[in-house]
Length: 117
Length: 117
DNA sequence: ACAGTAGCTTACCCAAAGTAAGTATGCCGC
DNA sequence: GCGGCATACTTACTTTGGGTAAGCTACTGT
Image (cartoon, rainbow over all chains, first blue to last red; front, top):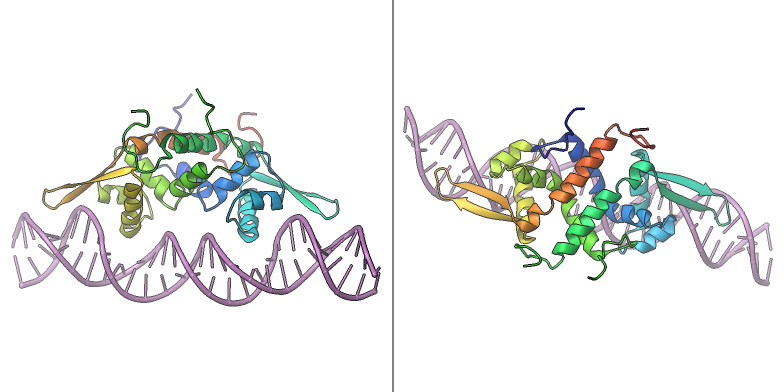
């Protein structure tokens, strides 16, 4: 088979598109909430401090358009809307995990040398 | 040893800070260029299509403030400035790799089921 | 002295994000 | 059946941040 293109070349359009999509403001936090099983609009809104309902609606629409989340209306009363990750969205756990791991290792701000010595 | 805190809880301040930093516009592409060994200001600028020198200077200053890149003035003529990743910055290769991998697997836009079947 | 190169810096404008208020649907109390 | 409350948006307006262009400093070659 051909070589994987994830070879750290100086520029990759696929990577660029992905990082600009996932990296938009609030999107990382919304994805993490969804991966943790938080699925209702208002629940996501309460999970992420500072996130407004307007921004949440906009981001969820973007993610839906990208095939990363699905939107399901549950006709209870009052009407509920459930958001869930598609396979493409669930596959982002590797990205969220990598960011979490990095953040844990280097949380203590402006360190420059190795975290354990 | 203690449990790693990268446990996919619904909200994590460390993760949030990291994803909002790395996810700022252009930052992902700049980090990838630096990881690939591109180190000069003008070289990074040429590597990333659409990136202006003003934005590059701003992002590099942010990354320097976060201890992710170092700035070295080489007193040649004309004066060169070399940017390099710190250990903290090089450790982001796991994140960039995860995003690249995801982008490769799902590049073909709005797919929703598994890429290989 | 003037054009050119590298790396910023300032000035200005528009698009994206923030804040607040409004809308649609349906149940409850009165 | 009308006001009030709840969920999930939607619209209007303000503020912040990114985009474009030009200038600025220090040096070199002609």
